[in-house]
Length: 263
Image 1: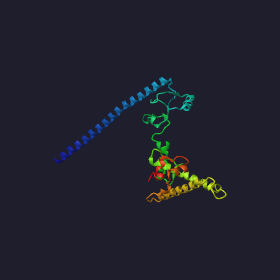
Image 2: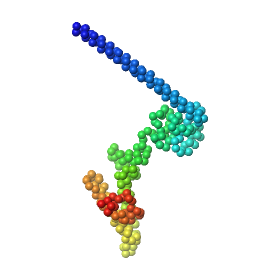
Image 3: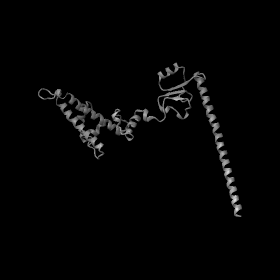
Image 4: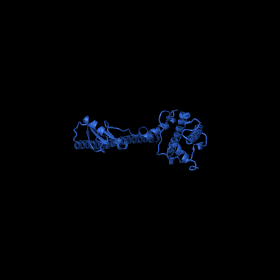
């Protein structure tokens, strides 16, 4: 009896496997058959769209079509001179070349082989000023290179922390300018009796600028050593002192560098 039961179990298992395989194959074939009409419908839709666009702009079957999204008179003139035909339907997918101002105006999911656009998908990190600045700052995590050594310092002014860094940089540069002028022309600024040719104000400016630069150097040293605390108190001046050094009204964004305001 046990042998017969085993035989029936084997037959049922074999039959179930065979039926399952056939059902899976049939289902896959059904899916493919269902997808094929959808692809054909899309293809027919694209063909009708191309036909419609060609009729609208008077282009022949072999003419190259282009669409401009934005003001590009030079591009238009160059393409027309080469025999290309322009159409104005910016949302249409019927084009050989689309030239747009923004990446968001390109529907990358609808691009067909042979179609050309002037943007790459998801490339803001290298094609926008903010993205490029962010990428350069991230370089230190991949290479032992400081981007400030080969690229001008850049700031994202949409970021409050970056705004503070920019204002600090601006103020420190103004102070280094005062010191550089003193080092370059210091002796000529003194009169025969040792008086400052530009008056006492310039001497005071030099002293203030030196104080700020020493405070900034101390702050950078602390940051480099990863120590706690911030030795930037020497960078803080009164608003009228900053105005004298900057040669203009003390910027509102520099409040944290102004004595009596950030206290």
